[in-house]
Length: 149
Image (cartoon, rainbow, N blue to C red; front, side, top):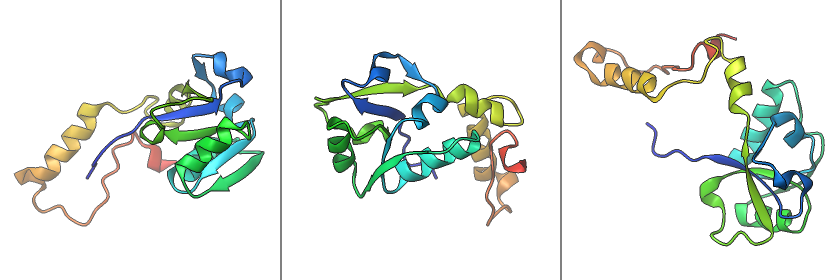
């Protein structure tokens, strides 16, 4: 069950040279010194990089919470990928930039594109319908064949 959805954004020190861009490619972003927060930041950043044949080459710091990560970014320690909802209302000293990874992620999916909300909705409707009433205990992957590779 999906409880919520959050956009992930690239967060950089306000004075960072990449901060003037509208969007960042995955390759240029993971090449920067990184600050990771435990949990989703750690997993998502590493997974995205690995799927692209890249790696986080310079992880400067791993911290337990988003506030500490933002404080380190503000001080110029590195860059990070964080859920937008974790950002403080006042973002003095840091800048957010949209990640331009969707095109890359779509290229990794056998269907060649990102999924559409209605495709996920159809799967959920099937499971909730009489036709799906005998289906249980499964993981239904609605991902364009991504789990096949």
